[in-house]
Image (cartoon, rainbow, N blue to C red; front, side, top):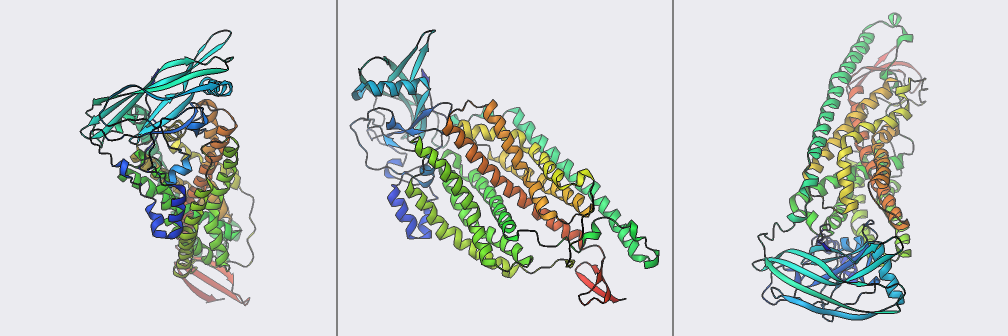
Length: 629
């Protein structure tokens, strides 16, 4: 059997965990340096004749469960005598559970080797059973040579009607392509199977390897192109999904402009006509529509602190996702092992000022007084949700002794990032937000007593709006979800980030358009409780994505077992919750500006002033004129 690895990303380096922790604790500047790929002497990617070439062994795990990985040495393999003292592990690698172990092979640049002995050992009864379990469950091991990924099966099976014959491969043949002094391709095949007799007490095993060097036309800059599955990601259906989403945007924008704006124009004309009538000429029983809730529409939403935290975290994630996509497009981070995760962590930390600014501004505009508590909730909210999810999944990983278990030192490193970056920037953003844009400038005053909400038609009911609000945004990204899920859960390298940026923009635009329409329906039915409804309606797209993930798990993947199931649904739920916050904040931000716009351009009348004297206050734009009655 011959297999070649095609499914991981690379980075340059593996710093020791203790040194990483010490570096993080020293200063913010040094923590930022971790976002860059580490560079070690053996990873300059330039070799001379006879230089050592390190073969890094990573993890083992079942083929169907890509995230269920274990340290290579959890299988009773042996290593060669050659050792390397320089090895590095980045923050992202530690979080992804990468466990690089030097194979101990004596591989030298451009020097062939044939049937070299790696190591010899005798498998006892327990080791035989362990290998048989790994072979029967289709275990593969992953490795790297010069940051190029490889994958190969542990062994193979021959099934008969009465038994299962399992055998382990004991020989690995590497074919390494070079261009001048650089390695540009790596392939590996496995051979020399040894039968694993289940009743045997001892089986002697000799592991060997061969290395062949060939000239290649690939350059160092294009060496990852052979891992990019262009036939899959650039399929016609992918282009069709982009076109379909784009047409949906045109349709929704047309709905907002043609229908909604014409309706609003008719509403403005009707209200202005009523203002021109004498009081005795008005039929108060005919008054209806969004103008009647002007005294309640700017009322603070319930649970203001939590609402501000949700919006602040969501808007921060919106910007973080945009920056990560742009950095990936410009820097090709997808070809660097775990670099995208490392970059995402620090981009999130640096964008914490956005969450503090937006939530602090919103909280102060609605007369929130306990701004320090609000700031702490914002700083703890999303990191707390992520930490709780990872903590629970980590228990399962520890129970299964998986390499995915996050080390304690890595947890301390993440905590240091929160202490030295996230919290201070959130505090700074909150202070700036509440002082620079915390002044309430609502075009209408808020009545002391909330207006009763009349019975509404079915399509203006809050539950229906919440349920229906996510359908169109989900339809805009439905096809792209398949490519993203397949890339992440099947370990294909997702590289079409230009597509992702376009779909991401379309998703935000569609969400904003739906939020405007939903807000108009709510206010026109004289329901002033729009804040939470619009946030939930915009974020409900995440619920449909989670339902799709259930379908994908059962119908597309072959995943099995408690660990993989917990990992899949745990982190999918976390991702969907993040999308809920992101799209909810976008919908609310759009709806808030829509509400301010329509009430700033119509004359509304308040019945009495604070002293109880009859007074008519005519609001137009941001100016009010009090007329004595």
